[in-house]
Length: 630
Image (cartoon, rainbow, N blue to C red; front, side):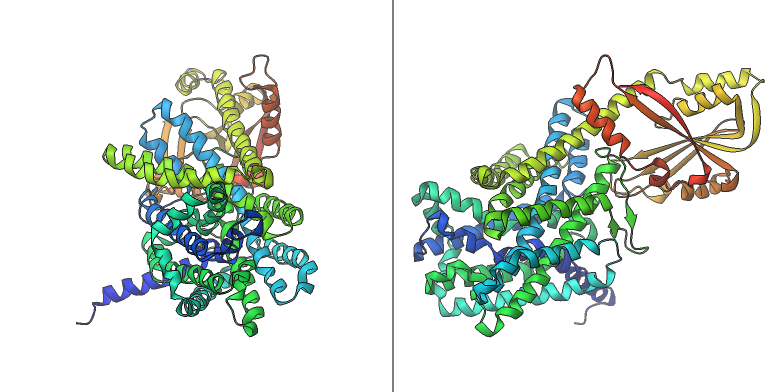
């Protein structure tokens, strides 16, 4: 029977989204075969390439992919969508909401979620460095004479990639899907050809072979476990990009193409090592026929550039979420496309990320050296995601306690096992993502705490709005001038300090006075119908409350145009925006250590101006400075 037209349309749409997801979501995990098995048999680990060891390690890689990526992320964590959006900060907002405001839980969950997000930034630095390095190192397989050119060529590729981030990449994005489909098909076929020659490797499907390897190699098995985790890097990206493509397309792409191709390639590499133990020095490239080596290097570079692009986009998205949720100062966020909301560019994040990557490439010089640094960033974020998802499952979905305990035991045993194995490599490079993670956590926590203190200080000296309105009714000696004044305020029940200062010094009010409050909700997007509330307070006085989600950015002129539907029309050339600019001074009774106060002041001074962030025309702004003691 022929499928109904609607079914055909749905299937076609699913196929299109799955193709796009292959090009964006799976770049990181899809390029892991470049270095994972090579690092497992690194001579420094002292693991001989015996058949038992090869099959045991291949089994560990396979079951890590099944447990972490397939069962945890694809089938469990992806259920925890924040109105369709994923990612560690979206999950944090969901978990905090699920606690119902329980202060005993909120604090630890926020700390855990922020640390997971901070480690994701460290992961964002390491992924492009290790992936592109591993791809370019394929040249050394062809000839050792290329060795001196690996680092310079890697830097050229990465600098070029970051240099084009401020341009619309829609055309390039459309090429990502077909390139990555070709990548997965080719690496899968190369692996299949080798498996057919040595089918004994299929014994790696037996989890007992991996367990025996761990049980019989003691300390060495822990070292190898810290490398096996490289096979599941990119699992977090599947969840983070869920809002862009949807759950079903990602799952469809994984089960129909990505998972089979990865398993075939890993098993094919292992089969090659069974045949020729010396191939362990770079089994990925040695799988290819001699004539195909350099084309594979070129394809690998393209694939790792795509993987890096996806990570960069993820960092931009995370930066925007951090600003909107109040964990970061205002940043310059530029939209590159009128059609796709996710096409954004954050200059500070872009160049800061590139600086960190250049330091990594120059400092570590090879993918093998970087492998030690990679695992901690990945496993730390994975463990944080597991805990937050379990809180949501128990508190929001009301799953039985026994089921949450079983899932938590299985998933956390794997996550913490990987994390513990990688912590042993702190002195060999693992310190880098930890340093980045703790540094970013400190910045986010300091900003959040500083803004809370500042809000309390401003509230202490604020006048209640109802008291002010009563005073205006009882007073008739205030001069009212033509035009409209808009006062930005953080609270809906207090009078903006900028208005009080204007009234104190200029002794005038405009004919129309508008109090405008922008609120960011802990959901990705606020529907247009719920965006705006307009209230008339008294003759000539209005209160406007605007709500956005953490995936949306404020646009005040657009909001004011929407007010026409509520009977409040604005002529921009006759409207003045009054903003308070706080000058922060140290407190005599500080709530934060002095060094953190100074850090908060520095962050405040470097925040993007409110006029730019809220897209207010600069020529219509009046800033009134006030001193605030922290």
